[in-house]
Length: 299
Ligand SMILES: NC(=O)C1=CN([C@@H]2O[C@H](COP(=O)(O)OP(=O)(O)OC[C@H]3O[C@@H](n4cnc5c(N)ncnc54)[C@H](OP(=O)(O)O)[C@@H]3O)[C@@H](O)[C@H]2O)C=CC1
Ligand SMILES: Nc1nc(=O)c2c([nH]1)NC[C@@H]1CN(c3ccc(C(=O)N[C@@H](CCC(=O)O)C(=O)O)cc3)C=[N+]21
Ligand SMILES: [Mg+2]
Image (cartoon, rainbow, N blue to C red; front, side, top):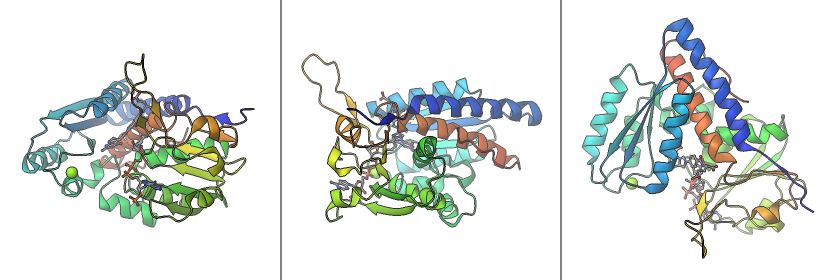
């Protein structure tokens, strides 16, 4: 028996992008502002290029202006900081995304802190991290936002749920904990030093995996009836006859779907939501820069 409802991230993302397109049209019509998103890609990471292409296509489809700066892998930190400074001053740019990870001669923290917080549509700048943590506005990171929206499609009120996040990175695990606290969950963050991880994950009504280890979370780590949100994007080795390896999440999907009541697939789960939320953050950045209140974007 395969019991779980499969949460369709592609479909929810399409709804979010539709909402964004309406807000973009309204901003143009009422205020003469066309939101612009600029992506900066340093080096040749082939995985990054797929996301970057999807992002620019969907940005344009929503009626926004998409620009891209491709810099060679050996770009110096000073040159990247100079580009960021130019983009901060450019009035046609409302969102700046510098694709991570960066080559090792570049200090990621310095680059993130150089981005104007008003244009930091990734929500990685310490001012936004702090504002989101204290509830004083701020731009929330796209992947955690996408996870919360997907969880709420099956459980509109998350109040009181035991949420267990596996992973404590600055870009996913930690900000996800902040957003779930805001939704009144009881939040546990597990990581590589957590003792008896399967015992911890089995407590979760809402289990979120952001580890980067293919299919690490097994079926018997999942509490019966739980909602499972799989953030992981892992490319397996190509099998004989395959051009490239399959994409899988951090959760053993076929096992977990027997136990969970709802689960996100990979691909087609959190990934498309990340891009949709990036577009939503960009329209809200353009609004804020023009003195307007943010609009709600949940599907
Ligand atoms: N769908 C999307 O849009 C996105 C997907 N991703 C994917 O999500 C995954 C996580 O990304 P990210 O947060 O950047 O990854 P990081 O590598 O930055 O963090 C991974 C976290 O997992 C923890 N971890 C590693 N191994 C174990 C283990 N054996 N048991 C328990 N915890 C463990 C680490 O613990 P410790 O801190 O102790 O080292 C760390 O906190 C990746 O697969 C990535 O590709 C990321 C961003 C966006
Ligand atoms: N500054 C910065 N911001 C990011 O948000 C950021 C980043 N750097 N570096 C890399 C990670 C990863 N990431 C993904 C976005 C979309 C998909 C996505 O759309 N995935 C599709 C499949 C794509 C495919 O087929 O390869 C899916 O899951 O269905 C995946 C991963 C954003 N990241
Ligand atoms: Mg680096």
